[in-house]
Image (cartoon, chains in turn yellow, brown):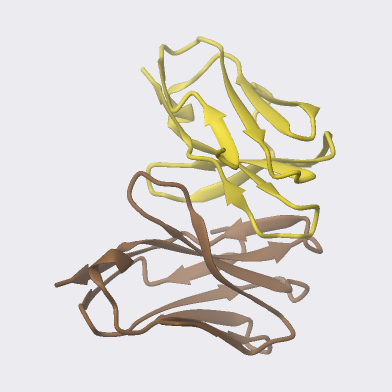
Amino acid sequence: DTAVSQTPKYLVTQMGNDKSIKCEQNLGHDTMYWYKQDSKKFLKIMFSYNNKELIINETVPNRFSPKSPDKAHLNLHINSLELGDSAVYFCASSPSLRREKLFFGSGTQLSVL
Amino acid sequence: GENVEQHPSTLSVQEGDSAVIKCTYSDSASNYFPWYKQELGKRPQLIIDIRSNVGEKKDQRIAVTLNKTAKHFSLHITETQPEDSAVYFCAATLEYGNKLVFGAGTILRVKS
């Protein structure tokens, strides 16, 4: 009964590959997010969706494409992976836009070799 | 972090002492200021938050203060314990609440 779950937990892949990370929340929240945490622990917002609609796209390379099939799911697809994409990616949700308390998933450790 | 500055980047205290982490923000429209704790290998979790209509908020050993005029807010942890060791992030809302931006984090080490 995990509130925000994301898979996989670990992802090791070669440069140039395409990979996806899935996220699901069972909290009934309207808003979902992707954050990237780099090796220095800096947490940076990438995208936010509200009721399946893209709200924020933080100048992320277009190799990153989020998809929200419904408000409980927000997946992240990454094309042509690069070394600099190695990081921990956190999915999060909040009750609604401007209801700011975030509930984070457990993170996906992506390592690009 | 972008528009949210956090200091210090690392903080070591003796068990039982107090710890203070400070943040400043630039957007005068910011109205929500949460603090998250991230233990090693875990997800960030909200520990306390404050809204702009309040100057101080307390929850047991942790408290947050906000100075809207100076645009800074602080986290205070009293009687620190080894389990308080973690990375602490401040954050502030930007763009009229559409975006939550985090500070760069503070690594707190509580020595027993």
